[in-house]
Image (tube, rainbow over all chains, first blue to last red; front, side, top):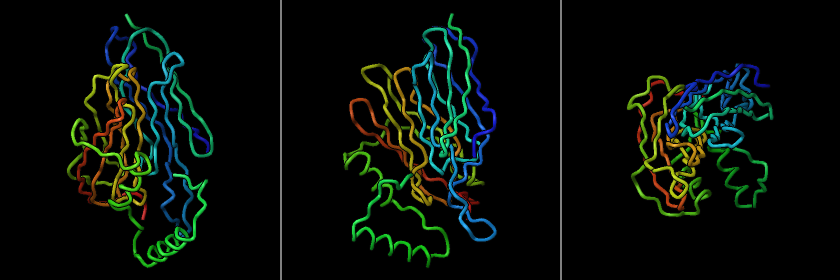
Length: 109
Length: 153
């Protein structure tokens, strides 16, 4: 299943230099664990978003490897030390190689 | 977890067969054990010793719904180029698969802290192991009582 939903990202628009900001992300996805059985008793194949990555001005600074134990509609929060203005890129990749991206701007002043 | 490059030896094949047999007998899902978590840690770190402390796991004592259990963790570190947290691995010893999540941090993270939501199949221990930039390992463990299990089944 391709990731069709639009991810939601919350980043403060402005920060002081040196300030540590919290970033919160949420994306809709079944995160099928591969452990569940359907009504016919057949195992539902695993289908999860396995990688989430965050980069600032093209430089990756945070990565999460998600396993099937991560809940459906995975939420992720993490931190970033603001030093200069620029743009965040967030990317979610699933087992099938499908990718969804989001961006957010940050002004440091 | 992928099994792409898994070429079993005779012994492993026998163990697998025995495991599959046991799983077929068990009424529920085959669940991970502390031994399986220890195996994963051995694969990652080759049996390096771990110290307690530095890692703070913030979990509910009782989770009413095992499908969405909040997981918050923070590792005490200055997060400078010379001294930072490289990665944090989280395991659950009562889930069908022990791995939960692995975080990779950099000095630009500012704080080695992250939150997400996870599934827990039953009452069990959650273990977090932090890998520092100097190679030292720190761990923390917390028990979560689960009223209704997640992970299907």
